[in-house]
Figure (cartoon, rainbow, N blue to C red):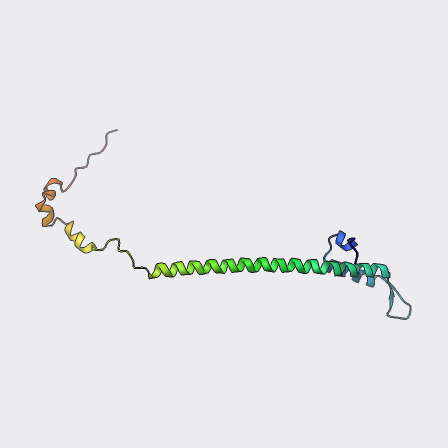
Amino acid sequence: MTDQPTPAERDGDSLLAILDQLHELVTSARAMPMSASALVNRAEVLDLLTSARDVVPNQINEADRLMADADALLDGARAEAGEILARAQEIQTQPRIELVPDLPREADDLDGSDEADEAGVADAVPATVPFRPRSR
């Protein structure tokens, strides 16, 4: 193999494109009379085969890199999902803070019980506030 890029590499062809070119070369080759053989240009076939050999490692390396990237992304997503689950389970096991712990007792206190009357609060606040419409 030489350091010079092959025609297929210069054109950025993939392995499938090179194989298509090789197939076209063989199918369009002149047939030998009374035989299944065909005449193909040896240099063209060898050039395409060399191109295929050169392209395969690059494409395999690219595929390997893409797979590694996908695996890393998947691992990161799994780790994040595990952290979210752990936080959710931690929150679930924590004791709940009761925002209104003694609601029934406090409701009784608001209905004008003896404590409010003793402090004189019930007399200081009128039972109803008269409605006065705004003047325009």
